[in-house]
Image (cartoon, rainbow, N blue to C red; front, top):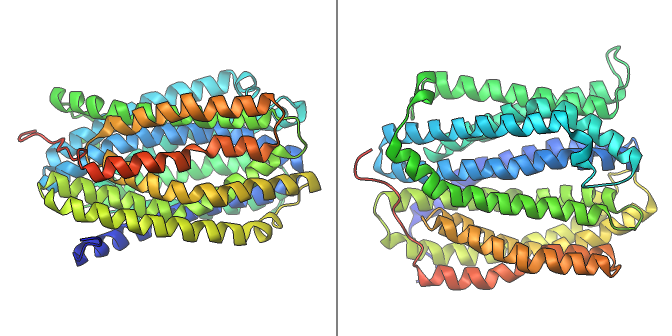
Length: 452
């Protein structure tokens, strides 16, 4: 059987994927609004905001590790309808997110310039970046807690709440961007400072919304503020036993993104940082549907294994591979068609336009591999219980292939698009690993206990 005939699978996939994809689309709209509005201020401003937002991106990647640990374990307990164990797992995740965000915020407030100097050397760009980072860091804690609570809701198949949270963020961010960046309603134009304030306030708004929803509206999990203090030695061991590989994998990816920005940002070519910002924003758009469907696959996989229906996973896995291979090809074609119209939204230099075209050409090829391997390795393998494999696989590719090849290419003075291709090469190479791993079916593991 190549494609499953289980209509419930397709229904669940669509019903879960749509709100997750819409959440990603709205999040993308927020980023796009920031970039386009700030882009009117010139190359230095957009480059400064880009490097300043890299810490937010790194934090988002790390937080995704905590979310992944919560979601993988809690979704399996949801398959058993053990909400007491779920609450304890979620409480552990929230506390971990709180401590991590507090440390990162302190570092960004105390040492913004030394941190951002790793991404760029130009004084004007660094000045904008430091201004942006110092203000947006005020929202890091709210962001981490919000994402952890969204993961808690996704684990009980309430994916729509993430979309609503993002809508709140979009409305607040775009409104304040317009008012503060350009100086409306009697307020003087604040430029990059205004964009940073808008971002920080939107983080607070989305946090307040998710807190009210989770603790006062939701009736499926029935989480209460006192539940945050719940503890369990057994579940804490499980959270870090299965969660640490996920978080470590995200840290590997964070290092990869950190190095990616540092390597590209220090290439001696005009317009590279601005082009990286443009290409990165379009890349985020290309992830919208893929992330939604991949996230839905993860929820379905965790629930199915947690409920003991492992025989269904085989036909689901074959279906996922075919669907995401097709999705990758369609996404690559769409990305290529959108390239020039998307670049035209920015008021950037001719050099930046040329570099943007070259980088997007690379993305239109590598996104095909991203769609397939991400759904297989994250949606199936990680959510299926083999949480350490993805981390080990990422570490091998990042440290033995991606970074060494990109550093060598940069040292030899290669064109930015070629360095960028080396940095994205793992997206294609991982497909071969994913194909073998999935079709051996040794990754299905039930992480729950018979009693909480």
